[in-house]
Image: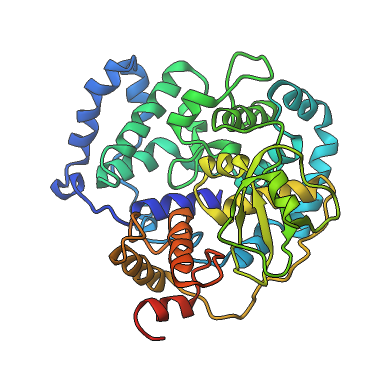
Length: 392
């Protein structure tokens, strides 16, 4: 849950308050009625949803100014996300829910270890699903005007869920950012992707483990999960490996000397690309389209890597073979913003100047490294920023 909240906090940083400036929260609520009615929400459901919601939650508004998931190094993030305790708990849950997980895997093609990894990271296997009223949280964010209409639309979607009768207003709880239940779905995602797997007539991601787990798998399939592939593999590169050729068929990587660190063979089909979140000398991964499917759930690279690695560990795989660069100099958020600005001036970066080391910045760094004849690992290290800004 904390991971999803951090993601949403990062999304909010660029947006400022708009509708909150008039100080009329009742007027804001009243303005929702016509749109809610157009979505089929009755007056009874509307009134029940806002019963006791007399104003915005100031703590929710304050938390939009905080973020951590995109600023922490990947290796620090993994310490908490893929801990020994979480692995042990996940294996126990796998044994307890073996029948349910097998049925979900058979129906969707998503491995049970992957479904468990999402469940574990999103809500500690259902133990930390959030306890804040979703309607109040979303109303607070929408009232403050964050992200334009995004949270107004999510609030209206929440009202639709209540109208459908899948959950009662007091039990519709989640994170401060409105992510709900054991899977931490926003309401619009719930409406599209949640499933009733236990057959009781409700899509209950709050109390039904079967519905929660099946909803994760259903969402992943919608995001493009390919049952024929893994999310990726930790690999070792041969000496003098040409990093400029970092994307292509998996058999081509094998032919060029790339080997899995666990000694198993690489697949004989599929496309992949190299991912070096700590640069050369740190763990190297060959990632597939399923890595991007995970990022569809949460856009953080660190999150996607944590899901993949936790899933592997729950399936019995060993810890990562290569060491992380703990203690090495690294760029913080302001440094990454300077790097993004510098690469944009060079015509190499077209993303937002958000200070986050995501795929767009990684690709821009690679293009710069290739142009400058540097090892093209895509890693945004301080020395690269110094070079770009003229400190050669």
